[in-house]
Amino acid sequence: MQVNLVVGDYFRSGIDVLDFTDLANALITWLWSKTLILALLRNAQLETTGTALAIIRAVLMRWTAHYQAYKCLLELKATLQMLVSAEAAQPESKKMIITGDKKAKDHATEMLNVIMNSTFWHAIAR
Image (spheres, one colour):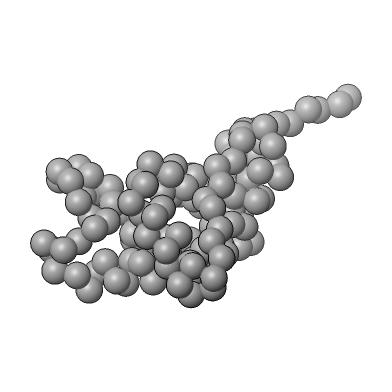
């Protein structure tokens, strides 16, 4: 008997390694939706390394796309954390990432907490 599994089956399976994939996908989606953050990320990368990586979104049916998306996110970890630290050091009136109405600020704060969560990065690296 042959069983055909798709990527979605693994994401719904409850395997420990996959506990943080929803957070990674939410972070990637959030970053994609914020052009200012993408610009800040690009500028920070160019200043520190001379090259800029892009945020990649995974296609549900392709394992390689998920691997590449998470790998890219891991490669951007230091730069993302540097941006979060810079944002935290700014007074409320000069914040560039935590902006908008209460809902937008709360979501941005949640995503910045994910970026600073070492357990998240460890899980994604696995």
